Image 1 (cartoon, rainbow, N blue to C red):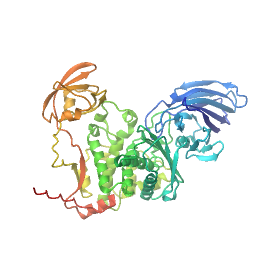
Image 2: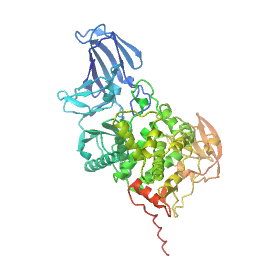
Image 3: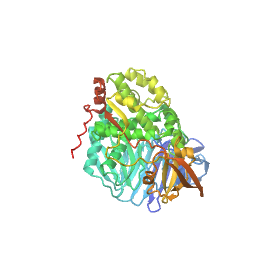
Image 4: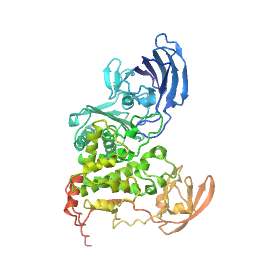
Amino acid sequence: MRIRVEAGGFDLSDHRGQFLLELEGIDRPTVDLVLPSWVPGSYHIVNYVRGIERLGASRSDDHAPLPVERIDKARWRVSTQGSPSVRVGYTVHGRDLITEGVDITQTHVFLNAALSIPYVDGHQNEPIELTLHPPPGWQVITELASVGLEPPRFRAKSYDELVDSPVDIGRPLVLAVRPAGIPHRIVLCGEGGNYEAHRLEEDVGRIVGATVRLMGDSPLSSYTFFLHLSDLWDGGLEHATSCSCVLPRTLFAPEERYRRFLSLLSHEYFHLYNVKRIRPGALDPFDYTRENYTRLLWWMEGATDYFSDLVLRRADVYSPARFLEAEAKMIKEYLAQPGRRTQSLEELSFLSWVDFYQPYEETPNHSVSYYTKGLLVSMCLDLEIRARTEVRASLETVMRAIWNDYGKTGRRVGEDELLPIANRATGLDLGPFFARYVAGTDEIDFDAFARLAGLAFGPKPKPPDDETPEPGYLGIQFENADGLVRVKHVLSETPGRRAGLSAGDEIVAINGAKVTYAGFEKVLQAYPPGTRVELTVFRRGYVHPVPLTMGKPPPTAYAFSPVESPSELARRIYESWLGAKWEPRAKAEPAAKV
């Protein structure tokens, strides 16, 4: 079957575009068109079909109308009545500037095929030609292969490739760099932005170069970073030869915000290896109509997070101290989630469809991000391999082996293959590690793993001159509700949980004194651990007293620090891991005499 799609007739003020799907070579009485309910890389079911309007079909030769039956929410059945060629027209509404969205506005059109172009059931592996009719003076940018210029025409080898190749139409600023000799475009879409173009080019080049060096080579002939500047953060979505990121336009400064941006870019770029080409067999082929379950998402996302941080270190975007600080922050986030003791990494991966993208009040108590735990388990696994092989192998060895044996060849990773691959690549039996931390829920002794590299890990000591009183601890996560403190989550085994606080409670007073969201954390300093207090809360609109005893808060920060006398092997592990010489702890300056 020959499949062609045309998109144009954009009514920018009404946020709508006109689409025409032409099918030739039909040899069946009916044809089913299906719009996906999820997008690879974003593992939750969404009703994308809500943006499709006024779908109708006709014969191609005489334009006589053909019957169309709605089979389910995202499936249409066209009766061909013997015609070998059919035209299907419809309207797409979109004003969602998100990573997997359709956004049609006065300044910009961003199209994801999964939200705007249904596939022909049974013909997902056949080529698709896409013709675009942009507004006058607007440029079309995509990584699809170009097959014509007036109007712009492109070809996808399959529906999967079409979904994996977003299209941007507008007047963006396009920066071009050639790290590792490969053309890369940085497409900046949207008004404003506090970026420095030259620095952006340099840093993207460093990230790309470090990634290619770590993996050994690149499968790319070109790549595009789509950076959509907005007032909100929606993160990024990986594609095989591009990524789409939706970012606050002021994310490029100051330095801490800019590093967050580079971390996102590094993560999405590493996905061109891990996820897009190194892929679980359970996700092949994609079934766009339902959940696709795999126990390997922790590796696909968490290990990618870990390697993207390593890339930033190898690119000298992170110093060794900055890298360790970033990992320590992730450990703090992890330790704050009681759910880390409840579900294994494999379970977290398998159940990502349930609440990772749609968390509710109990999520922190029965779950933890497979990104965060996957990163930390990958880090510990890396240190374990370096120590047990005396630096002859590492997690990089494992990743390169998977890339060479699976990613390059198109072979998919089976649900139980990751451990055997790691064992073969390193010559170790890593079964006990996987049993404890991947398939199990054992607590991770981060200090023990850190000491393999000549480091200690623990709570960051309070500066001697810091006299801030230790606040009382309720064990809640809260949000601003029109100036009031509204409980969002109540953590297990905390004073708030034991006292019966619930999500949705609005805390309006402590010991009879009014409290507000703006000053709540400072107010808690007046009630140190062990203080008996009475909270006044509105619960479902009715006032309730909640007596409790303030608890001791968890550490505010954690840190890695050099041990006093590391072994020679520990020094070598540190230096191979972080690419820098191990340095002893700086001695404190003696206090000045008064």
